[in-house]
Length: 177
Image 1 (cartoon, one colour):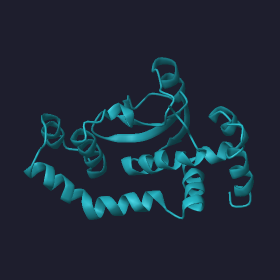
Image 2: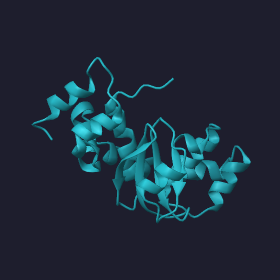
Image 3: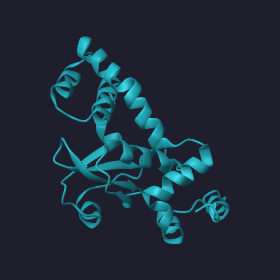
């Protein structure tokens, strides 16, 4: 990864924007969680997963308590009544508070869905999305879609690992209207 970092950046930063499909063909291992987050860390000097984990440890319960004491809308009350892991609950609470569509960041799918199933049956958006595979309350694994296709899959059962990988996709200099 480190030995080819320069070549990866050169290809990604090329003046002619390359489709994700081409980048994935040329740098397949870059789309694996371990290497994607390592590339992000090399570029930004930030370990996204550690930062998210620390933020949830430090502030997650504070945010949940704040919304329990002062719910700002009915959706927040509904989210608080569910029994979810702190990371996903905080994310949903913030999206609900700022009246953002959850689908703009997170898509949920059946735990048995494959990448081919999702690409064939879902109309995956062009902008990056974290696809959580599970039963709605617990997630066994996740996938990331960019430009309508699945580009990365992870088997860690934590939402924050997937969210960190989603943030790391911005190393691709994605531009959308």
